[in-house]
Image (tube, rainbow, N blue to C red; front, side, top):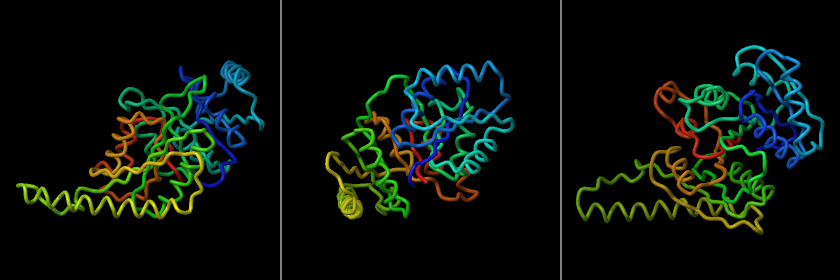
Amino acid sequence: MQETQKILIGIAFSPNLKANIFEAVRLANMFEAELVGVHVGPKSEEKKSDLNTILSKAEPLKKPFKSIWKEGKPVDVILETCTQENIDLLILGAIQKENLYKYYVGSIARKITRKAPCSVLLLIKPSVERIPCKHIVVNGLKDDKTEDTIKTAFDLSNKLNCNKLTIVEEVSQEELHVKVNDDKSLRKANIVKERLRTREDQRVKHILEDIENKNITVNTQPIFGKRGYSIGHYAKVKRADLLVMNAPNKLRLLDRIFPHDIEYILSELPTDVLIVK
């Protein structure tokens, strides 16, 4: 992720507004970045007053806050604002189950995530009081973007004083090339799995050689399963505080019909998720 100089938060006047604003203010100060807020809908004195009241109760911003009020379709307005304001990080408030509330999650989050010109942070558990981040999970899959994503996860770990980071190496079941139907084929499958684990560990270790690390405990975890679904499930089971993922590549038509990588994450967010561009 490039240096974060400008952060945009989507402002929806929902029960989570105060917590979302407080989280965004903390992140802006952490990065020493300018914070911009965009509300999709008409501007009113009441809403303006409510927003200013919340900002006055948050910790003081190191740089002035900028508010933008635009009417239109949420996806279009947010993406246009990202481009016009040269945003480095977009923060969207979200909730876990997309069928309960779809304003900034579900189909809208998918569209924004695919098209956003910057990194996207989806918050499902914002808090007015800062909750320490104790465990970050980051994807370690074989991809050109992965090295930068892992470096971003380390940078965040240092800024958040998080001393535990797990790199999950997702390995597709198709790579096994072994059908298990007896003890012999089971042993063969286990041998292949061990070779794949060794291969993935070596690849990740090569990435880690270029990253300075003093205080963070780093674990690697190979997982066999569907890409996206497996790491999301792991982050949920391990109760990670943040999941850091590569931004999706341009999707083919079939990828938009069937679940694909990040789609599993967006359909039921396991924790707060940062999608790195």
